[in-house]
Amino acid sequence: MGSDRRAKGFVAALALFACCDTARAEWKGKAEAGIVLARGNTETETLNGRLDMQNELERWKHSAFLLALSASTSSETTAERYEARWQSDYRITPRAFWFGGLRYENDRFSGFRYQASVTTGLGYRFIETERTKLSAQAGVGLRRLEDSITGEETDETIFRGDLAYEHQLTDTTKIIDRVIVESGSENTFVGNDLAIEVNINDKFALSVGYGIRYNTDPPPELRSTDRLTTVNLVYSF
Image (cartoon, rainbow, N blue to C red; front, side):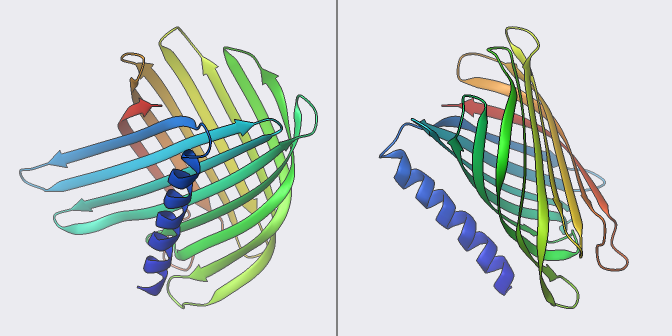
C-alpha cells in the first residue's frame, strides 16, 4: 500500500508541476482516454488515460508524460499500472542534444512493485522534417527496483536507450512508435508503444495502439512479457 501511495503521489505531483508550469510557458501536447465495458456472461472493464506534453524555449525542451491503466474481469483486477516520466533536453547543435530524465512506474502485475530511474546522456535527431521524425538517445543512470513478492529493494547502474519515430502517412493519418530500454544487472526492461492516429478534426483523433512491456528477470511464477491493445480518443492542445 505504501508503494501505491508513493506512485500515485508522484504522478499527482508531476501533474501539478506541469499544470503550474503551463501558466508560465506555452505547452503543447495531447491527452488520451479510452474505456471498454462488457456485460453478459462475463463483466469486463478497462480504463486508460495518458497525458503527453512538451515545451520548447530557446535551447531547452521539456517533456512530461503521465499514464494510468486499470482493467478488471468479473470484479477481479487483472491490470493496474501508473507511470510518470519527465525529460529535459538541451540543444547542443541543431540535431544533437543532451538529456536528463526521470521515470517512475508502479505496475501491480509486472513482478516489481515499482521501478524508478534517473538517467542522463546524449541524443541525436536523424530525421527532422514536416512529415517524418526519427531520433535516438543513449545514456547511463541509476535505478531502484522493489520486488513485489519479497519487498526487497535493489539499486543498480543502468544503460538507457530510446528510439522515437513518427511519420505522417497521409494528411489525416500518422504512425508513432517509441522504444525504451533500461538495462541493468538485476533486470532489463524494454517497452515498445506503437500507435496509429487518424484525425477526426483539428483537435480530436482516434488512436489504435499496441504496447509490449518486457522484463528479463521478473520474480518466479510471473511472465516476462505483457501486451496491451488500446483504442483511445485523443485531444490535441
